[in-house]
Image (cartoon, rainbow, N blue to C red; front, side):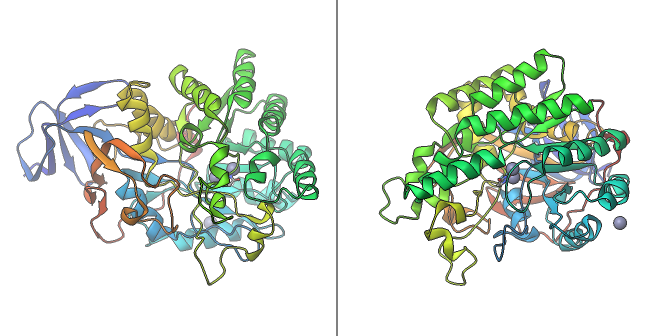
Length: 472
Ligand code: DUC
Ligand code: ZN
Ligand code: ZN
Ligand code: ZN
């Protein structure tokens, strides 16, 4: 037989085209796109279904430390299982450099956690928290050359924040070495000022988190990051943009001819700051389950984010999956979380729900096209982070990373059906139209009907090369 697998009768969707064709898969890659493919060891009938490039989630946190004693509630096995069930074929988590530690050693230790434990492919970003001369001069350039071609910097958090000079120095290395930089744009000092003021006034409940980080905190940091990027002449990605004020900065920068990329997340389309009040749940900590940074805003912000998706201001939608457990007697949740919003770990789970939410709220409602959906959830991720043209689209030579999607299937999101390590979903009871009915990772079925199929760990840790990073 010519092919290992044929996918027949489906409608192929890429970022640019929608067409009726069969796919022939050989050795984990797409070997043929043709009107009719017959000579295959196994055939899948995709009639009535969309055949999409598998989702790429380029912003997820897996097995990452989050402050003293707090670790995220997913390891590579559970996170990639959840990702696959949600229609994804590649995720990009972060190797975090703890302050005072070697970035190289932290990265290699993190990679060791991933090797042999992934159900789908993984590509690893770095987080630079301590740009010492050795990190700037040797470790970071060496790691970039080794295949870790993207990294994130933070403008807030006690144990992650870089000052302006450090940001400039790190940007400078990225420019010289051809790496992609992601920026968490929220101002450290503005947040501290607001947090202390709220605490003095006794506003310590989870909702205080939203009050402590008003939109201007994000706007100011976005502007500062953009100015630093202009000074160094480096394109950057501003991640998890939550509202109109940061969007205005990005639009302003682009009008000046600067290359500023932008990401948003489903939480900024579907949640609001009001959710941090706990949705009527009498448990005073119920709102903690919606604490993420930046915080979700209001319905006007949601509308602005939708406009940004329609106009192309946003190029990618990621989950920013950041899972914690709340009913946890073992104390992984910092016991001080009850004391103040300041100690509630920041982040919400979403690796498994990103695609259904964006499809349902975006495509099924007619706000964005199918092709735009594919661009926002797969193609642009691959292009921005050096996975293209190996991943991110459908065509001869691409990895056979595919999601068969039923655009009409109606489902209700619920924790009981999810595979992630968190013990809740912020979207409990959320109805969606459109569902991943099969996920195929390098030619092998890894999830069916929103359920992980139990295949062995075939996911690889992918090294990238700066040459395969896109032109600016
Ligand atoms: N930033 C992230 O990117 N993820 C979770 C928490 C945060 O602040
Ligand atoms: Zn190495
Ligand atoms: Zn962030
Ligand atoms: Zn994140």
